[in-house]
Length: 350
Image (cartoon, rainbow, N blue to C red; front, side, top):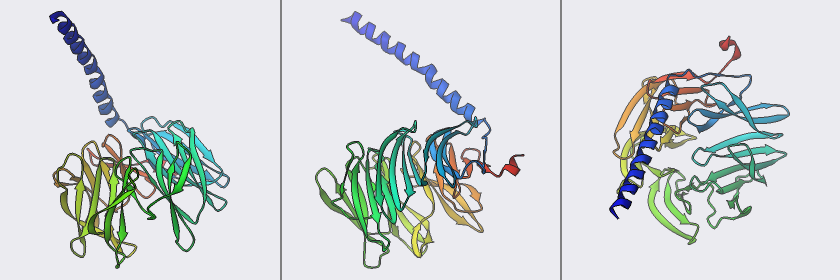
């Protein structure tokens, strides 16, 4: 028995020592990337960036009157590769870096197609909807599941629960236009109250078909993988944010400024770094905006650097970079607080 234990222990030590160089190589690779220059894209080639496929690769779209193309782009090497082409117009791109899948909305001939691809650009699912506007809520835990809300011209709607793997699309038992998945089988949503500015937050279980009210007077709700948050009105220009994660026993509450958007209060632009548990958002600072990082486990906030405008951001999977701008035309290096152009006019590149 002792000899068997010795053999097992030796095998374990060997496997641990074998993993160590690999980990060191990953660290060295990450450090090497931080020292590299970002090679910009020409505005003549790219309509705009769409998000991170991995730590060093983004997606971007390019269009002309006859087609729209979707490309991968390696920001440190400048290498581009066409993934997908359509005769329609790509109006929305969602990316699941964890599962390496891409969800597109493509408009053509008064219809909108929901298209699911893998990271190689291979078609996994497609369905056309006759719609004036379409909202697709993608399940980050199971990317073959989604809720698709189809709007008419007078903003009536129908919401469908889609299982792309089984090619099934059925009317959802809950007819609400904006839902947020909180697990593989549950999603949350706000039912607006009488003032149309706040309402009650509910959760629905797709397996048990049961609905449960969670809390009242919610202005806003959103969810990421392993994190969700609610916003309630605190004062005229501030809200109370409640962050929930599996690691925290109770919600963590933070007071933070709100913005007026479409005549109603809403959060400042934001994104979430799951690896570090940091919620990135903005607050006004004189004539500029401060980018800040809020620790969702402690509620502590840290101002990072000033930017002239508050525009959408998207954090890279490793938390080192952020796309910034309405077309993600810039990249922020979060450690050094530098901002670099990702998409620039060809004249600036000469």
